[in-house]
Image (tube, rainbow, N blue to C red):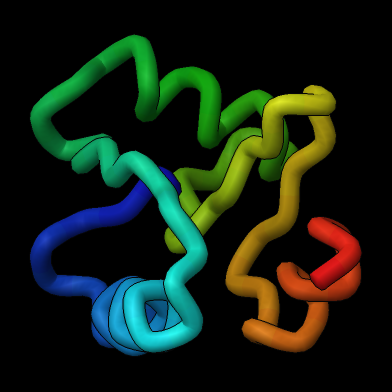
Length: 74
């Protein structure tokens, strides 16, 4: 999950993912220029977080927990 420390949506999604036992790696785009550029690429030039990139190469921006679970077939 690409996020920032100040993002309330990111904090909520991290809480929900942890609660559901869904593993993820968090990357703060304010401390990683390559990750910030990746987020911009998948979001039409915007650094919108939370952005999730899945192992299959797909991405979601500010998704609900339900959408993530659906994508992961959980």
